[in-house]
Length: 269
Image 1 (cartoon, rainbow, N blue to C red):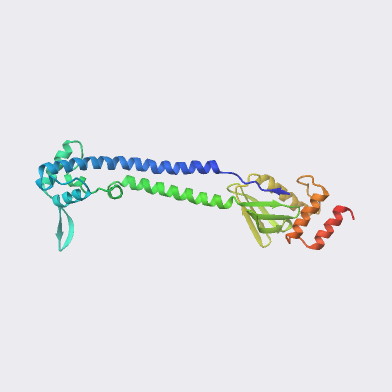
Image 2 (cartoon, one colour):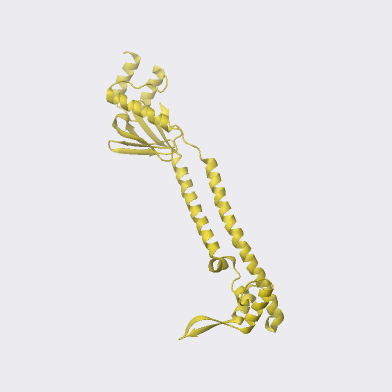
């Protein structure tokens, strides 16, 4: 009997998830720097307005104050009752010139009063940040799908007996088929094996000893078709062989008559 050995991808999974975290960290750092610069300019604009406009002189800075300033210095203009744009005041443009001189590129101050929330700013003003988050999100989904597939597939194993193949998921037998019924056995991607037969098909991935298992099955299949015994995978005593066939009988894979015949053969009766 030969049993499949599963490949362990734990280290690979750790690397992939570290790359996912690094991707999000890079996007957040880049967009965070831009938003930080925006908020720096906003604080400067608020301080100028509080000095130049007595209506705001003694109010506590914060998102509500910024919104009031934005609404004060900008106005919608409409056409046929529909808002079609903004009208910017002269004061808005004048303060914008002061911000420009201080090293904050803009045409009007209200450009730095429009947002106080990081995500709102990023979605509306930082196209590169949105694209970065989109790519990081797709990478995250790809790694998540791959991880779930790996967790599910690593439980699958197969045992190659003298005449049967037993497929398991954990300790549960999910499929059993006779080697003589196999039509083809092919090496598949991801270190896998694909077996097709009369009324069944089976695939297993990440098999460390895939080539060895495939060779053993092909030898057994050839021996069944030619009528010559296949070379044994390992030497086994008659007692071990008898126990193995008793397990097959208990599992319902072979009949009582088949077990009795094999028992007589092994014991030389």
